[in-house]
Length: 182
Image 1 (spheres, rainbow, N blue to C red):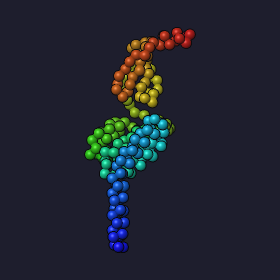
Image 2 (image 1 turned 120 degrees about the vertical axis):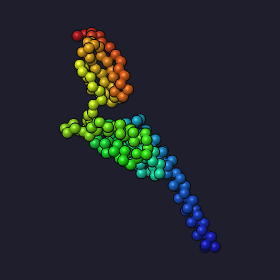
Image 3 (image 1 turned 45 degrees about the vertical axis):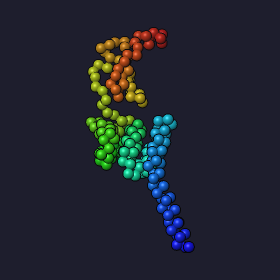
Image 4 (image 1 turned 60 degrees about the vertical axis):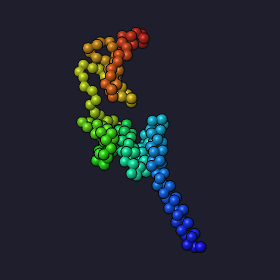
């Protein structure tokens, strides 16, 4: 009788452990969604970084999920101006080279650019994203767009999307001055 109870306890424990192991990838996927929500909806980059770190730990054999979490974590660090972004991109290239899309993205993010903050500019990251002469350029917005005026087209303002390279006119500087009463 004692042997049967002992066998039953061992079988139940084994069954529970199998269920826990089977749930780990699902838990990591759910955690990834929660991290993305924290980053994109709540705007809490530091909180998202911590959740992405947990996803990497929970991913186990799901290398694609771990690589995706590392890329997202690096992007958060990059938005914060942290040098940790480069370290994470390098880790993806080194440890997840078999994950084609993630490794290519990591290589693209550090290829030819300096992600580490320049001395005296904590919180800022500089890299060349566009080169053209004869421009007055405003700051780059958080969505990757820049407003500029060209000497070639006086009294015209343009918006350039740095990710796609597209440009569109947005108005005339004359009309803006007239609206302000100058």
